[in-house]
Amino acid sequence: MPVEYLSTLTATARTQRANLHLGVALAFVAGALNAGGFLAIGQYTSHMTGVLSSAADDLVLGKVPHAIAGALSLGAFLLGAMTTALMVNFARRSHPDSVVTYTAPLLLEAALLLLFGLVGATLKLHEFVSVSLTAILLCYVMGLQNALVTKISSAEIRTTHVTGLVTDFGIELGRLIYWNRTGQAFAPAVRANRTRMHVHGSLILAFTLGALIGALGFKYAGYVATVPLAIMLVVVSLAPFFRKLPNPREP
Image 1 (cartoon, rainbow, N blue to C red):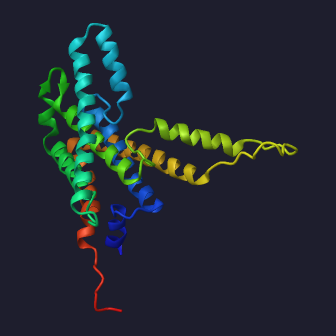
Image 2: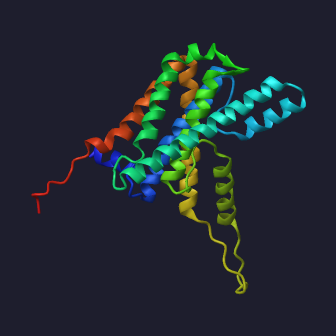
Image 3: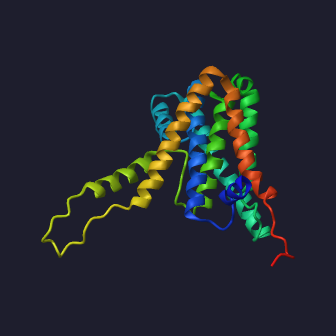
């Protein structure tokens, strides 16, 4: 049943399959928001490496307002991650056996994406210092999402940036093509971790596909292109509420 499958994606009892499938879905969302958001506001918001580097450059060049804008973007991402930690830890301590521990952050992300899709053009017109409120909103959403998938997978998966994913994938590719010469009994054979390759390759592909779809969506539909992404997150987050409970009378 689709509902049964979807409910496993945010279940408290985690499996590698659930982590991978949720990670793929959220990597797709992150790619779409990052690429589409750039077309909308001219700024990438899913990774903070470039934001920090730009802020440092602007500070050295005397562009203080731009440096402050970078700090605000970083702060929004950080606040998003903090929000997820607060929500998840509160749910775990209040209801340890709850099937909806991870529902609140996903629903919040969906609500913010709906807000972005419906009034993003209006938010773009407003700035704090020199950064668009739309950029701050997207950075917050990315921090929220990255922290969620990090906690839900015990730090095995991250979805908002691919630098680490490409690095790990490259390492495994190097191991895969390594020539283990015979006659070297003193050295262990080099073997690629094909499971890790599958996980990282799937996440990279999902992010790339999401970026393509997001760019096309923003190009032809504008901000409303985020509405389907929000609906997808709502479906995933609410699936546990519609899961068929076992009948205690049945053997």
